[in-house]
Image (cartoon, rainbow, N blue to C red; front, side, top):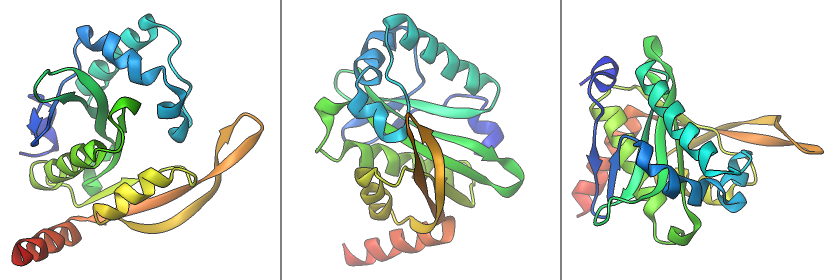
Length: 196
């Protein structure tokens, strides 16, 4: 599969505990549950959703982004119930450079169980093996400690600081710039295979 193929038929991904699938209009109430929580949206400087209608519009916009090949956002759902508990995405595609940016979020009731890492790891795997990406990037805010920990766990390297890049009420925050190359990811997987 290539980037073009990934935007032809929406890929459904599975892990031990999760199902990553296309957003659906009926996801709006579950999306509202995590998107309305400032503890979830604050770490990436987004305003929480104020209404179910806003979450329904967000779902529709993500489907539109996919149709326009702007981003591939998966709903992260519990594998047993298929209920949305978060999202994960590849976006900011630079097709000629075979590069994309990784994003993820998980609702607060599901924190502390490694689900964001599980979802992000599967999206990274898909990006490298199925979309033939050469590089995946991530740009969490400097204060988003959990996100930094997740990225380091997945093998990303901190490549720099974008100083005071994100404006918030009354202040600006630094953004950290992480990158992972396909060859680094493949080497880490091979080393893990030798150890098991």
